[in-house]
Length: 259
Length: 259
Image 1 (cartoon, each protein chain N blue to C red):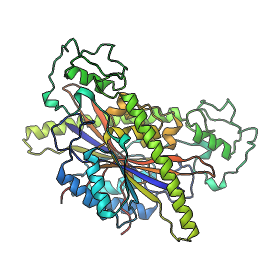
Image 2: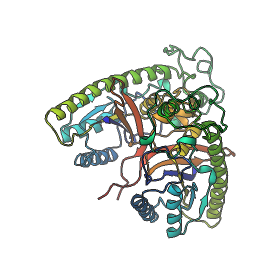
Image 3: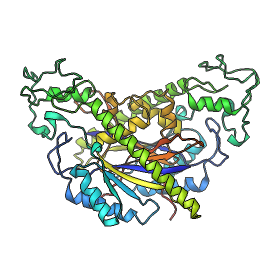
Image 4: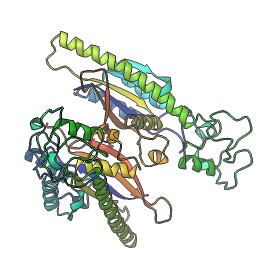
């Protein structure tokens, strides 16, 4: 029997040039964000109502979470570790402004000194396409200068996820016990909305499916669209303490198209 | 630019006891199947219209495909290799009738002679829970007597998928060339519906994401619900012959709930 449903929603499109946005705190497109809030609010009158919200602190997630929380009087928790990966010197730099330099300069070429280090470089470093392309082809082994690194990002997100699960399972269990004691005829499942980023959602999916998050194909072949919903069902299948996490839907378009 | 969209839909619930249905040709629940056909037909008036249908030959898929095809005059191809895995002596046997025998009989115990053989056994074999449980825990290494075997199933489905892709990419390319020649202002993407089974859809997803289809977690932690839609976008990203397959949505509930 399902105990708890957690749904991960990716923020809407951001209000800026096409770029790799990680730590850069860019706002969401106001109109789309507003439509998404409206849609979430109207869903609160159905069996799909959420009881609680958790959000990344970045504006493109938090603005949605705060407005939805205030208008529906839902508890909101800001979880710092749910923010997107820091992409270092590429973070927020418009793709259009990145030079197609096929001969990277001495201080930024993809040599082994950058690989898997996860430390900041002091030298002046400049962005260029070959390095970004190398990162897309092999995100786990290509370290973008001054970035967080994929392994650190993975660890941070999964630790945050495990903390969320632990807390929410306790709350859902207490809610169920209360429902049983109060003899509620049709106890509702606890449903929690998590507002987060594409990379964060992809890492959580890989964790649940026990997949290799280092594989480039995992990052290239699965699209997590803006305003898409990924649904996770948590249950205690046997009479023990083990919690089974199952994905029931990945990246479902949620924001309805304009009428 | 996307060239082609292929959407995989799983059949609706079947009209029978809860069981492992593979080759057993059980019909779908007529009412649900009818509602799904109606919903697909009404979608044909939108930008999400399909141009062609491909289906598994089994009744629970084919009945949907045939009715949709006839009512909308869409070409239909029956692809024998898209049928579900054959689960051998467990195929179609109601779970309720499988004995909870913790001491499997001599001729069916999980010994090494069954593993990875993929051949039919002549001895009388009976179903029992421990063997089924072993299969759920490790589907790639536990061979159910008289079953197809996961490796053979994987190979069959992926070969069929690759043939489908090859054919559909050619047709989509011809359609696009025709649109360019006829100066069509807003050329439409080719959209194809594939009606198939849970195991088949899961294998195709694993193939596109280049994941380990032998991993038990892949089969246990990802639910492909009845009447859910999984969407694949195919494109030629660079000016070469390589076709990029990307998953845009996995297991989205498609059949609307009753009003």
